[in-house]
Amino acid sequence: MYDKSTYTSLNAINEKISFLQERSGFKYDFDISPFQHFASMRNQAGKGAELFPQGIPHLIGATSDCLQCYYGFQLDTYMNGCTHECVYCWAKAELSKINQWNSPVPVPIDISSLWELFYKAFETDDDFPLREVFLKRVPLRIGSMSDPFLSMERKYKNTLETLKILKAYNYPFLFLTRSPMVAEDEYLKYMDPEKATVQFSIPTLNEQMVKLIEPGTESPYARLEALRKLNQAKIFTSVRLNPLFPNFPDGHLSGKKGSFGDRPAFDFFNPSMIEEIRSYGCKNLLAGFVHMDGKTTQAVSQKVGFDLRSLMKEEIKQTTEGFKYSAPEIRSYYEAISQKCKEVGMDFSTCYLGLGESYFWKDQDLWADKKDCCNLKKNVSAFKSDTRELAFTKKMKILYPEMNSLQLIFNSGWLYRMRSYLLKNLWD
Image (cartoon, rainbow, N blue to C red):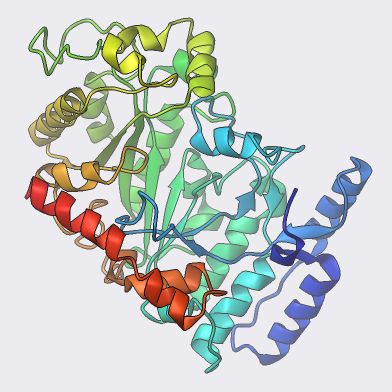
């Protein structure tokens, strides 16, 4: 079920490490024994050869709704699953369709491939598709389809090894996690406040709800304590209300049927948590409204014992089997949260991923920094570039290296750029 050309064998990892140790100025004492242990475990489970996904960062698709993401240069230190097992997870929904979710556990990536890219970019003149991205020092976002701080990180240390490489090459990065492990001393010592930032996903402080639909994660209060420790170490932190679940029926706020402080119909997100998050020292909050397909909506509803679709408008129910709210109601939530953030002295922004590109443009008036939805460039000094600065044709060449010059011209993105132009001007 996978493309073997994007995987590396144990022998190949050994050879690559030996090559790099001889030539690189970065003296890296790489321990391959965790990979050997993992390969042995997979073979015992009848899961096939000793192959590991290559540790090559990727760009979010140039022709998708993720086109406008500022930090779309991403890496997962573990792939093909996540032991947090969040019921609402979109990655779980997608990978489960092709039987690549926790089969039986996530797979650590081949770190040697990542080191090789840094070596090529900063110690040689070798050309390769991502060279320009590295040389621009576009911040690397770690944590996309899986969390970098899974429980198995205790044994395999793949994220720790990634941190060592990033520190050696003075490279800026962003962690996205649901785990307090990120603040432990063995990780913290490799984080430079000028180059590192951490975003914690904390969509609720309701611990009973967390046990039901984030069963593999630790307490949200443990995450907040980790955030406090990182703040004390001068690491810039953010909290993501992501996914942001509504607590009232669609139209409650936008239709002026009630207020933000009313008793919730679904007690997952609670406005009072914003003040509590601020009390731990958080100065930056991002919200991204929930979006789920039909199967995921049904699974979450069963876990929490509440029919989420009962909150939806009848006319929207006719258009989807999943969970979706009207644009005016989503905007009302964002405005209410933005106002609450102002009251407690916290910056606010929105994340549009999954909702469609129009949400990137129309909510910018709520952002703390209109030129950076994550609000990082003003707070982390090494964050000077982003993936939106890369030319569209360059992104296409990286994503589709097999395209010839004529194909690149034909697929130059005029249609996507025209769409973006129209959406931007519609909401300006």
